[in-house]
Image (cartoon, rainbow, N blue to C red):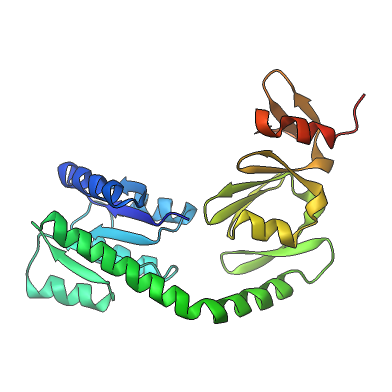
Length: 252
């Protein structure tokens, strides 16, 4: 999967330069925001692999305060970017345990090496922890699926019981999956292939590159618009998956 980078920078010209470098290095640019509120809102939806954080951003919190809030919930590595070279700012930044601190102005090579170093460190850490992580995930999933036909999904500080038969459809979003129910949806950090292996696979049929539909919840299919009707929701039906999907329906 692509390595995702979030840019938090309030200088438009500088933000453009960072975006071009991210694209040049082949990483996935998750987005660019210039204030703490939008940054938190974006991370709530998708947690990046790395954040390039300007310290002097707009909003209720500066970059250091925002990083502290982020690290209370997500262990995301952060590279600080700042034009402030005073001792106090650097001391505050050190307490956040950022992976690097770059002082403006800096060259492209300096930023590139800083990002690549952070990526290599994360890769090494992930490789070392993979065995223990896999074991933990297996144990976690066994605890989650306590009842046949149900699963427990973590939502903030609660575990909510969800009946598999109530799920309308699943939507893949990189490292994450959205679980759509009639009245709400959940965002969980798991690959679609892993999630499907935990569920009753025969119930969920692929309708599109990123969508798997609970075949028992289909209310109709719009063959002209190539959409599937599920309660009040519509899900795309691609030409590639159309024939196989329709073959699973009992129609005359």
